[in-house]
Every structure is written in C-alpha cells, then in structure tokens.
Amino acid sequence: MKIINFDHFAATKMRPEVKDAMEPFFMQEYGNPQSIHTLGDEPREALNKARLQAAELLGAASNEVIFTGSGSESNNLAIKGTAFARMDKGKHIIVSKIEHFSVLNAVKALVKLGFEVSEIPVDKYGSVDPQDVKNALRKDTILVSITHASNEIGTIQDIKEISKIVHENSGAYMHTDANTSCGFIETDVKELGVDMLSAAPHRFYGPKGTGLFYLKKGTRIMPLIDGGIQEFGRRAGTENVPAIAGAGVACELAKKELKARTAHLLPIQKYITSGVLGSLYEVYLNGHPEKRLPNNLNFVVKYIEGESMLMWLNNKGIMVASGSACTSKILKSSHVLNAIGVDPALAQGSLLISLGEDNSLQDAAYFVKELPPVVNKLRQMSPLYEEVMKNRMQSVQV
Amino acid sequence: MPVYSEKVMDHFQNPRNVGEIENADGVGELGNPTCGDIMKIYIKVKDDKIDDIKFKTFGCGAAIATSSMVTELVKGKTLEEAERVSNEVVAEALDGLPPVKMHCSNLAADALHLAVEDYKARKAGKGPLGRVETPEHDESEHDLLEHA
Image (cartoon, rainbow over all chains, first blue to last red; front, side, top):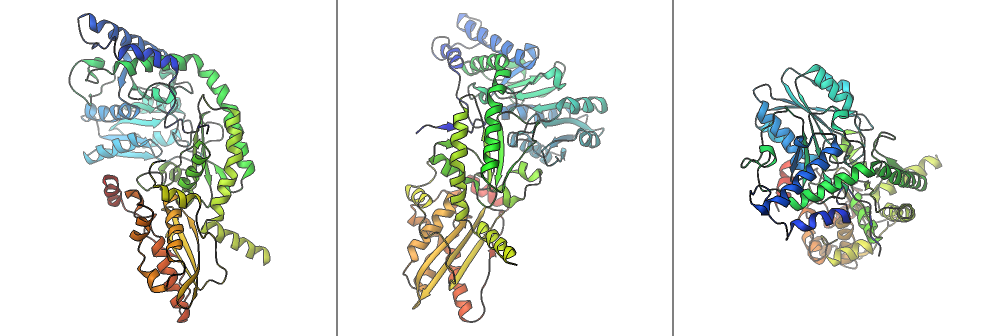
C-alpha cells in the first residue's frame, strides 16, 4: 500500500542532496572540527559552509548562527539563556498561549525559579494582537517569545510589528519560534526584527538531530551547556558534523525553492480544504483563513474522536495527526485549540494535516474520497452523534 | 501501529455488537467528552441472562475495542456473571492495553455494570439512571502515567 505522509510536522524525508552532504562525515572525514591536525580540516570546512548556508536562509551573519541539537533546544536556549543572563534586569517574560511545549514548559520551569510569565491570549483564528503584547510589557520584562507560525493551526503572527513594539517600548529581547515556518515562508531575521530565532532543518528535508539558533550580535545569553568553545562558546560539546552539513544543504535548498514550495503546496491545501468542508457536514477548519502556512490544515470533526480517525486513515495508508486527548500522551486535548475557543469535547475530533513536497493533488483527492466513510462509520458508532440526531428528529416532529 | 495488540486492532476494525437496542431493559452510559471517551451499553434481559447487548462508543481505538470485547464476553451470560467481569478482565481478554490507556479508555465493564444497575433500578421503579460523568484527570495523574 502506498504511504501518504500528511504528517510532515512529525517527519520529512531527507533530500538526496542532504544525505550526500552528510555521507563523508560518518567514516572518511570523521575528524573533530576543533582539531588542529589534518583530520579536523574537512569537518571544520563543512561546519563553516553549513553556517554560511544557514545564515543565507535567515538573512543573518554567519557568526550569528548557532547549531543546537533540535528546535526544542533552540527554544530553551532562547528562553532560559536570556533569563539566566538578564535576571539582574528583571524576571518577567511574555509568551503567547499557543506556543510549542518547548516554550511553554521552559517558562514553566522558570516560574519555579521565581520568574513571572504573562501568557498573551489569541483570537479565534489564533492571532496575537500586537497591542496585547504592548499592554503586557513591564519595566522588568526581559524577553518576549512569540511563535512565528503555529505548529497546530498554521496561523502566522505579525512578528515584524510585535518586534517593533517590543523594542520601542522596552529593553526586552524578542525571540520567535520559527521551527514550523522556516523553510516554507520567509524567515529573514532583519525583516522580522528579532533578536533570536529558532529553526528546525528536519522540518524542511534536513536531518534530525540538529537545530538552528539565530542570536543577533550583541544579544546576551547564558549557555545551557558549558564546556569548550564550540559554537562561539554558546553551546559546548563536539559538533554533530554530519547533521550540521546536511542541515546546511537543507537551508540552501529552502532558500532556492521557497517560492516553488508555496506554489506546489497551496493548490493541495486548497483542494483538501474545499473537499473536506464540501463532503462532510459539521466539520470546521481551524486557524486563520488566509494568514496561514501553505502546508498546514487543522479540522475539527464533530462527534468523533481523533485517534480512532487517525487509526482508520492509517489503514488506508494516510498518515495524519490529531490534537485529541487520547493522542496527546498526556491525555489532554490541544492547548492551542483550547486557546482559540474550541470546546474541549469538540477538540477530541481534531484532525491535523501537514503537507510536504512528496504530496500531490492525487494524494489530496484520495484523502478527500477516503475520509467521509471513516467519519460516517465512527459517527454511526458515536453516542454523541446519536443524541444529536434524536434531538433533531424531535425538533423536526414538533 | 505497534501500540495496540492484534486483538485490539481486530475489535477496533471489526467491532462486535455495534448499535442500539430500542426498548432496552437497561442502559449504561458513562464517560466525559472532555476526556474523549463516552461508552453507552444497551442490554436486553431474559431469565436473568443477557439476551442481547449492543454498544455505542465515542473514543479512541482502545475505547472502541474494550466496548466491543465486553459485549462479546457477556452475551448470553447471567447478570451475576456479567457483574463479575471487570475492566481488567476486558483488558486481559484483549491481550493487554498500553499503560496510558488503562484508565480512561478502559471503562467498558463499568458501563456494562451501569447497564445492569439501570435494569435493576427500572425493575424497582427507580430508573432510568442516565449518564454518569467520569472525572477529568488531574496533573499528578499525568505525571504518573507518563512514567508508567
């Protein structure tokens, strides 16, 4: 059976160019980039090259790019690194309610150490109002961290405006989590006006095991891992040279293909949206109708539960995700859906699709054909649906 | 999908006794839509035996499989035997469930017991009992589950 990956936020297939770039550094050029002898030469070159490629994609200088171990690590470095470096200036941090757990749980940890956090609410589309950020700023605010685009509902935030407000009205640093957006929409750090940015090459056809962190020149953070002088002293530990070399190529490809990627993804996204909304009733699209990533869709299917939907689609070869409590592993429905006002009971019917370059309009057509029977089967089995249908029949008879 | 046993997958994909019984003698419904699981079990009783049983479930794969399994386990059995079938017995009959599913998605036997209770209440002129809301999980419970 053909496998259709509609869960690219979990994993993307590496590009052959990426794998080729990594290959030499496993066995032939296995040296340590910090070595002065010849074995260190090629790995060091590879590191420099990857840093340039990443800097190009982000519009940064190459000495402003730090390689970490993951997107989550980059977010932790931004938040805890700033908090520990600037606690003499204040202990107040601002985030939004719809951040990734690597942001929310990082600030939660800081609260235990005496920091204060303000969580900015979002509207029904998941948009942060920049004025709300302005109103939350205090004299002791040291950091504002707002995601560039939601990893669940795809809504893109006005980071440029938020950065401007933060810098005009406070001495706080501005960080954006671009782990979901980078590689699919523009993430130029100068255009966004941020001091820090996190990105995840494995989300855009790079390898797992490495993350990008942009740190604007002059921005003070404390490293989370102390040791040697790797990554300008901001992240000690022997570098993951193969992954970093691969990440560099992924960045170069992203820069080159950004427009083509959107052009490929938009019609698929549009096809699925109209197909799903047109063939099923009581199904809703979450997130902003226009200001959203070209590769994300988030539906709520009423009266059924996400995991059982996911399992049936899996049987048909379609890999999707869900924000339901049962799929969350912590048995709680999505905090993002909750923040945009989706009733927790309805959030159980969450269906999360993330597209990538291996998807086609044929995949979209297959999905749109296969989804309704799955939904109907589960609805026929659902006591919630039965209740609603009975109530409707009664109101018709009255 | 390696998290579930083959038996769970079988009962999820081919659920037994799905549906409702009109004029059921007893109905047991419990769950909480916020947690993502609601189970409803209908029974028809004859000579103190479960003559017919059907279920409807809103929930994950485990919730559907346990509901299906419990109907299969007790069909034709006496009420007394049905009352002795516990959630653990249902999970064992399915060759086990992932630890995280043992709590909220493994309530089918409880729903069955409610149906029997409802049958008895109706006979005594005190029914029907209606849906029983199960409590939402608290944070400490999550931590335990995560480490289990």
